[in-house]
Image (cartoon, rainbow, N blue to C red):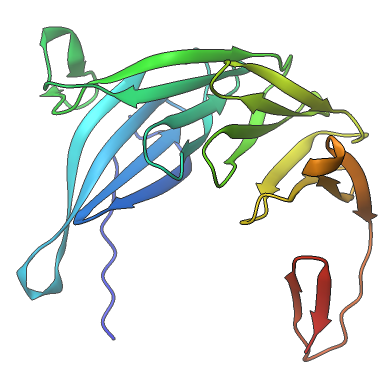
Length: 227
């Protein structure tokens, strides 16, 4: 197997903090976000001979601080972005190409796609570090330096529930693929698992777990297996 590493350097030479792929048919779309406060949309094209080409598609500017996380919804209809301005932006791909107002500032290239903010979710009071969609694309969870995780109802554009069990900032969030559980990872060294059907009640927390050497821990539903 031969691997190649295409490089993306169009974030004003600032750090890139997050990247996310969405695959639909023959189209691979990539979003990146970083310290330049912008989001870049790319198309990944596989050429003859197995070579990969990265094509710039659009530059999205709405955040007033660094963009720490970008996540496509599983159904591909929305892109969520969040960062140091404490706000979650929900973007939707519109019709048409670049207009004069859609010139990518750091590349002098006209945007090939137009992305519009459909909702701005406000509730966190500090930087947002992570975000994750539910499998249905109906809900989004975000984790923040304000020590909370917020579950958002996307159709209503408002918070559904705030999880405030963490004693320090929430640096990681995840839905399980079936949608029964939600997990948060905090700087207080706790992994917390919440049951969706129990109104996001914390049903399990782990601060330390030892797995025997040369063995693997795997989880499926309510079952944990060491092999």
